[in-house]
Image 1 (cartoon, rainbow, N blue to C red):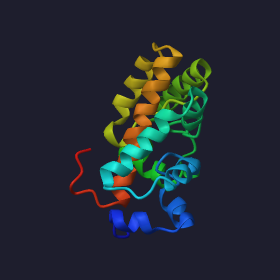
Image 2 (image 1 turned 90 degrees about the vertical axis):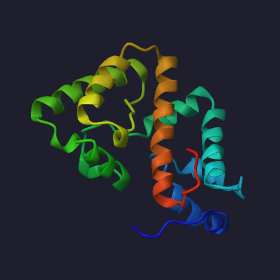
Image 3 (image 1 turned 180 degrees about the vertical axis):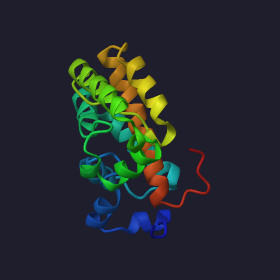
Image 4 (image 1 turned 45 degrees about the vertical axis):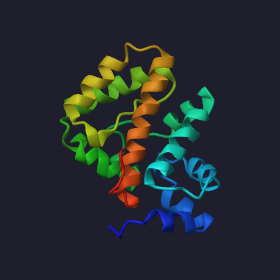
Length: 174
């Protein structure tokens, strides 16, 4: 991986370079990076992350649900995922699921999508395949508002880890 940017370099990026660099920290949602780009300069890595969190939190429910809809179903077409999602799902063991486990996860993905109108999102890098299967079953008991909040919190975890891959963050409290 290329060297990480320091916060000064992040603040100096041209708009297109900023979008190219941070356009997928929230899966397939370049609009978030575009909106946050105009809120520079960031004082620190933590401030940059907080501004991203604030942008997400300020979105109406439909906007937050849209962010969730940009995420892929787990264990579905690994070859068509973004490089970040491929690495994350591989790390979580999704690529080692048995055929039965894949069918089970696809079944629960369908139930979940039908109930909530967006895919199940969980931070794969902080979980393994067993925790993911357990999580989707458990979260099916939530109502839509609870699950919207839960899904967005998982998006924030994913985003934070992706940003830590890109930006120097040794002094981060996050």
